[in-house]
Length: 319
Length: 292
Image (cartoon, rainbow over all chains, first blue to last red; front, side, top):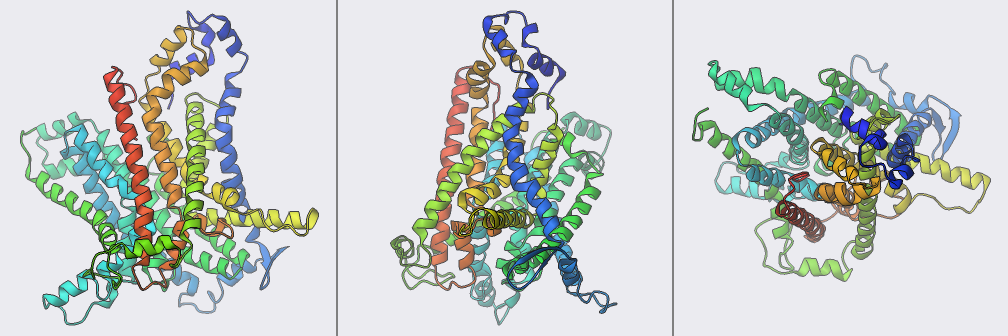
């Protein structure tokens, strides 16, 4: 992020020959650390007010009590006990929360595997096969533009294609492959996974592409000269060097899917349970401590997954 | 390596083309379907061609009060964009040298990006509820709520746009040549003059990129708004509300209008970035070249 040279210059403008004017003298009155605070402070305040303190409130409220219509600020484990209701009684069967998390993890795994596959090869094509910088930029932009448009619209966009009378079904019926429209194309797990892949492959492509363009092309030539096949180069050179991007992309995709409730709601016809949807349901029922307890559980699981993955790479070094 | 294209190029080119089709195909389908005739339904084939559904949306006789939600989303988007640009550039400059709490800010930004939106949104809503309760209990019994578009809503959007802004600033300064600033200082420029006349012109294309992210991410934001926006709805929230009930192309028309705004902003931003890059190239400096 910064070089030592840079720090030196910033910290002591007076040392640089030729800047010993009255202006420079005035400048030294603002100490560099004060300037840094002035520059970074506002953003820090926003995160403090709208991210860090809210997270603290989530944890605190998760231990409060509640009745039908309000929060009761007294200590209670009810948010958690309500959430895990029946979990011990129903053993060895899974209770509702267990089943919900299992389903969320399953969706997560499917989406992760598919986005990784697509994202890897799209990034590979852009990084290694597109030689001209202009083309590379143009095609990357082509992949980025949908990210700047509305997610809901991109979900709704599947309705005319996958619905009972949609393009896919009417096409299949016409060709005689099926007699009746397939029902599981829309408002099903299939459509949820499809929409999540559609929306979030971008988060895989960008970091993997970034890792791949940094790979020194002479390493690949060396592998080729040493007699490696294309596959061997891929497995032994490219994948290890692209690993940071793969991990960062995976963290993005997994955390998004773990907490998603909108895509699962819209594309699942509001019928599929998921970790994020429990929170939404509890909030709609004004059971804030239960919602907060679920948020804490989700946060803990997400954090666990991230810390396992970030053991593989140092995120800070990669940015 | 070999000259000419290997076979894998063609396989991957087809794969890439399929991916692009997968990205854009469905979107284009609803843009087309929103121009159906008055008898049109939710799927193909099209039932005539007209601007009936789009016009209906603007008459306000349709399903949502488009005008009000449109103005709210636009206002919020512009404010989020401005705040994101200013705070990201400032913080990006700060990160060029060491300062205390540097890693706190860095990890806050990363965490804000990857903590599930529903949790951030819930947290903000709890925070404002508790503030409301405190105000009611201690100062003003008739107080309604401090939650709203430009308080909790703005904050929720910033937790999503600022990390992108900061990461873009990192990318900019990774390839920024500090010798240019050195030269400016050698010529006696103050830090502000150095920033205003040397740094800013070079990073301007990318700063516009930050603005583009700021506006579009806010314009389409849903998950974080869901609990934190207060009593009023933004356009995406209205659109999401429609997904469960709608049986005619109203919803496609609304989608098309929202996308039209997105595409206008994208085109304007990319056009400006292109123009600035051309100008930089023409005037001989190659620093800060490239897009976001």
